[in-house]
Amino acid sequence: MPTALSVNCRSSPAGVLVTVAGEIDATNAGRLESVIIGALRPGRPLILDLHGLTFMDSSGLHVLLRVRADVLARSGSLHLVAVQEVPARLLRITGVWDTLDIHDSVAEAVAAHVPAADLA
Image (cartoon, rainbow, N blue to C red; front, side, top):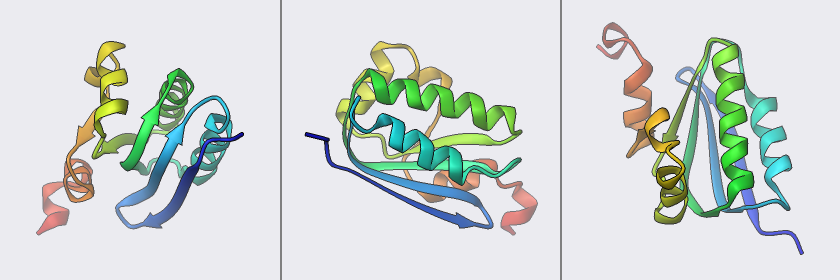
């Protein structure tokens, strides 16, 4: 039985915001990756709001790494927001945590890639 996963994409002047909730595992990682890749825009930041993500296995980790490579190839940037305890643990023990831009809030992620002159 597939694991529950909710994905919501929204484009804004600050980039593409993808909100992910539920669990990512081998049963739904491919769908998640397809939705995210379909939402990417060249040169635009991608913000993944993970505040509702309660579980992620290695399939989800691989999705993040492939998405990151795709975003960078398109001259964009990837920002993770509100990574919860279980997914954060996986990112830390695999060493991936230190390679990602991780923020506490969407506002913090937006501020990280908007030039200071644009915030005034």
